[in-house]
Length: 306
Image (cartoon, rainbow, N blue to C red; front, top):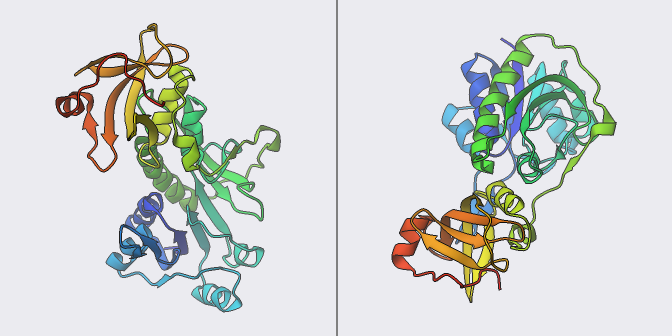
């Protein structure tokens, strides 16, 4: 079976790695990013791919850069026919792209050329896209500009969050890369005229502006679930909003709580209203609207985001 190098870091990549191994591919080397400080103690935390590779007994490297000639020599020594890259997070220099006989294949969570870049899942949700998918791309020196080897589409549902969409795309990506490596798909150049850029998500984008439309606010809430979490305030308290849907139009200034019941906490928006189904106080647990209201009274007329 084909010998591979695999490069990836988060859970999205683990699903692809497992899929390749289960399909019988010989993953001779796994690359993942160095351990990063995380958690309250800020101790070094291994990536999801590192944990999976060690559990499977795979050879592992964690270089800080692939520009190092010693690292490149280690890659050449593997004799891999292809390198599979999935959310690795490090730049692949031109010298690395040409090491495997079949080059480097990237699993990208969008329908390229739409949403090139770091956050294609969140950007698709924020934009209100009705579909997305996975692209298997032959990597080149550009940012997600290489030739397309395979694409598969999936619908985006109204209740999808970044987490639910991530999980579906991860499974699809694993299936696509197995099929792409098992066959000889013909490369198709991307149409640069249709390219959009999926800029990395910033925490500043997570603050809810209640003067926006209910539809846009709900997209924001779902796009930032689970990271970084859409945020608002209630007086001096910070709240994270995890699930919501547009509600029937109602009268009130943006951010005003119009009603609060087990069915949802309805808040006026700039256009329409938002019914909050799940939320969280700072330092607390994620709660349904019913559970939240059992421990905290929210009277109609109170304002969020002021």
